Length: 176
Image (cartoon, rainbow, N blue to C red; front, side):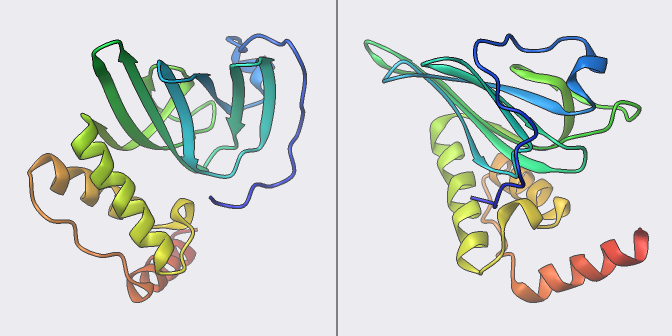
């Protein structure tokens, strides 16, 4: 997992903040874990803040520009009902954004895939990036768009190499 920067706050029994001014410009993600029923987790990302809501729920927050992967999985007595993964870049308060369930206010969605077989392929692509020695949250946003498009089309994903990452870092330096 991408190393987290120092948390801003940790508070117990606090509800998710719906007022943008109270969130401090952070993007919040509500996570719930009910064993074998409902599991929502962050696969990678630098968490800026965390609030514990209960034993099975918490809210994590990301600073603008932070990229994270949010996985949701639900089942019943007969098996998996729904599974999805979204790779999202948190946005600042003045930028346009797309909405996602359990993500306030929303973000720039780089990838969104539904269905466990396809979600597994995205998780494998994340593992491949990390196996190359690159933090998944630092990979080029275009790579995550590529992964989503190729998996949706049923095609193989091109590997994200250290050379491609270096090119992304140079491009980002020029653009900023």
